Length: 322
Image 1 (cartoon, rainbow, N blue to C red):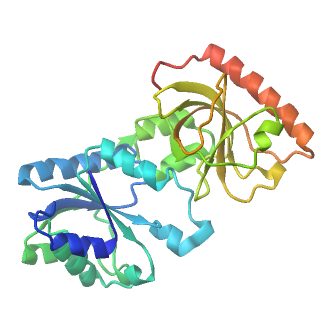
Image 2: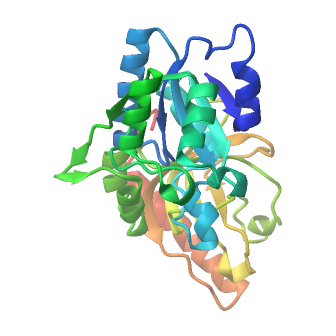
């Protein structure tokens, strides 16, 4: 799969000989946050049509996501960081991911400008899969009917996305987010088709975990996570080895944390993981994130968390591959 970042690189690529987009493409557009069952169905629509036409299957996403651009800190928390989303799309068999920077310049595009510059000149789109409520362009002036009308004139077709329901309700990123907000890990797994996980790179922390008898692998999160609290987790190392452990995800209020982070303590592990990527699967919620009056109180609670996690794991052993 190929990643194309930005309109400049898209325009440069579209003019190159041997471009993967030389014969056009079948595309879809959206945030694809969480890559849940609804997203997977849309991707299947795109792949099926792309196979019929003999062209690449393309997913267009945005960084930041539009609501993050407009709402800032008030935007909904993300279900997965960008790298993890890219890898999830790769696993679904997408040929090209086009990542557009959503900024003031891009938001000022007119509806027709977006169609001409991005869809036709850039992607050479031959078939587009989007929801019939899809809006685009400055002031959201572009819509499904405009795409259909222009497509009839310019030689591309437009198809509505199929709706996927679970328990009679449409699967959406908002629904996954709402499930995680109340520690509904099983519900989130049913909606996504896999356990909720976060994949990220381990960085140097403040070494506070060692002082608390709980050394951790620290993953910085660029956005506030959908989960907050302490969880039993199962983590996969770059070697492929799986380890059980406990993770704290949030702001670490007792130690004046200001940036969201994921801190993972792996049971019975000794070694250095700095710079490696860790795949963390959330299995069971232990407690909410709490601000303690002292570091000593925090140390005692962490010891109880470890005991509670080991007791839960004894009754709920993991499969070889989670």
